Image (cartoon, rainbow, N blue to C red; front, side, top):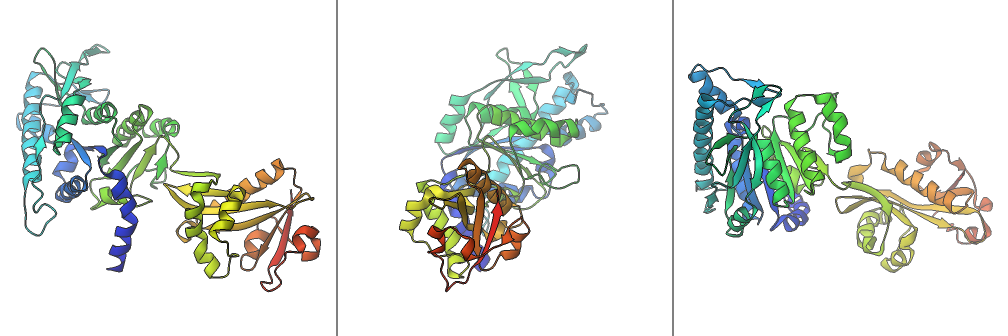
Length: 432
């Protein structure tokens, strides 16, 4: 129960931030066919109930393959895109139509003792995607395979304003009445861009983007994506990553790649600070910067437990407000997770490194080293020659980073006169 209460408390800022925001969610046909699909539907309903404006885009690749196989038709691809001839288009339309009905039925369920009870959702769709043919590429005619030409932004926003979930398929229509088979990733990406969505959420089989060692890549910025695409080649992870990056480059604030296999991955990604998948963001998710007056409250929350343990000297809000310009901080998605301060000693070339603190949940990521480097850079820029620190508990950490044992007598007189002999802090210094 305690874990649940803590989770809910930590999720509350995200609940407020997501309300009335537009999320475009792409679920491939493999995800619709997976046993976890029922849980994903429940999670989507929960998002809707929390005020999120939802556009759901579904794919249909395995369902199309099954219909082609049933008819004895061989699938044909070129550059990773399906070549859609007449008989293949019939299979596409059947697969998409069946999936759409199945998804609408799931979203219409009202099961007792489930997240669906009393939801009374309304799902809407229609000819909201205008498409055009890809045409002939390298001598290959894609026929009824197309690309998105236009998203009916006004039509979708009107439906969202009516509190409907908008369901888009991997089909598009031309002004001349033709039907085109589209890549669901392209539909989702274009919808997110045209709707100026807050988030594009892309479901895949993996937890997110995996590096060459199989480890999850938690966060990326668009300029970092090409190197991963070169490594992934035609892998489906690459398609998802490319769509996520293109959306961010075109104005979507954040794109997320999460697993349709893992139960609760969507909620963990959206309502916890570290997420469960891969985030591609325009801005840095975590940044090291100088503190401002608006950071005082967050700083107090970070350092207060350490003050109560006697590790840090107690600072009042008034003192922090007055000295806020001395602090550098690491901010992670709105939470201050680390800090350090530099106090130049008047009439000397010495500076004091003070109030170095890292949130207990983030002490393994080298953030203390990053802050130390930032403080040293600031000290050098001010012309300081020696950096010193007073510590009661972390002497070894500073010694491992080039600090040498010193004494109160070595300190400039202006600082030595303020030394608190009751704390018996050890003095360490480092030449710059």
